[in-house]
Image (cartoon, rainbow, N blue to C red; front, side, top):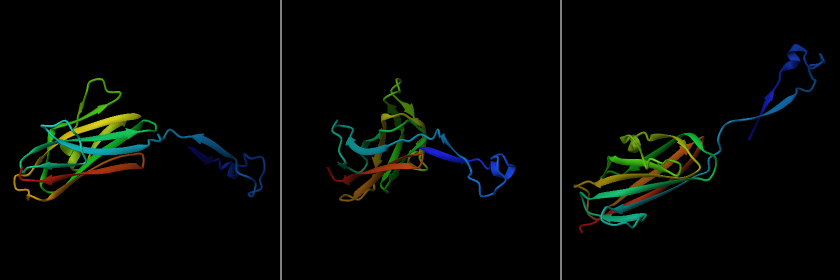
Length: 172
């Protein structure tokens, strides 16, 4: 990506010509703004199974695990932000939210509970795959037969990607 900087030297006569219609030199400069290419996939599963799906069945009061997979096929991004939106009837159990990245050797970076409010700043989002895993509890008062939605998004440098998953509230 190139940014063109206009050198307004004509006002000072630096162009070697006092003619105001003289051509203004244009100098291309490279910018240091990263160019991430973001994709998001959101899936869920009950704690009793290891099978991930876009739609899961759950009882009122049941704990579910969600996985937000962020793929950055471009350059590493700075100031990336992740956010989760929840329908009423679902509550974030924030202590199990963490970020795992292909370049993170420690296995996880704790994320504050803001994931479901204003979002959390991930900071640097490397190229490759990053996972954010979190748990949600279906409210005890959730209506059996209802469909509860969960949305996940990531944004960085004017790029945004999003996906959704659903919880079908069942008796068993």
